[in-house]
Length: 223
Image (cartoon, rainbow, N blue to C red; front, side, top):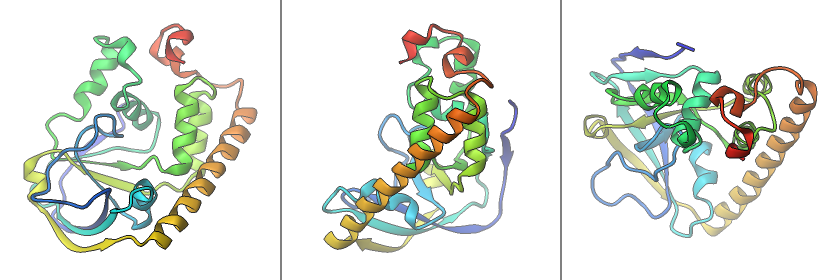
């Protein structure tokens, strides 16, 4: 599963960040504990990506950013099982095998990088991933669903060096109407994810490995 690589890019890119209550002070590599790629400052390549994550908060703001990638060490993750297992690690789904070689592989994967670049587990993908982690669909079903969904990319600044290269271009406080529309959009996307997971589960129910089999533990410990 050696599908990730170190890259260096001498260019700037426009990205988007959603904040529940606005950015105060300097940008720092902090977030809640269990995010896709660990603690950091998360930015999406598409404006719509962060919006459904913040639509339930009355003071939610959308930021347009410029990220200068020059001189930064970037881990580029492909969209495959390796990506899904790294997300599983960062969401605490591998804690039952802490200390194992598989656990340590993903514990070490994000180290020594300024930026992690990879695909985002959006509203539709969240449902499919959850069913994989819960042992409802196999890795083969998951991989086929990854191919079927058009996932956007996200950049996560892990270090102060990376955060110092982020410039806020514009900020926008969401109106009540915008937030309500985004709530409806989020529910629609999640419903699509459920439909996709059910269809793929039926088609590939006898192929591949379940999450507990990959971790080599009793399934009852995972659910």
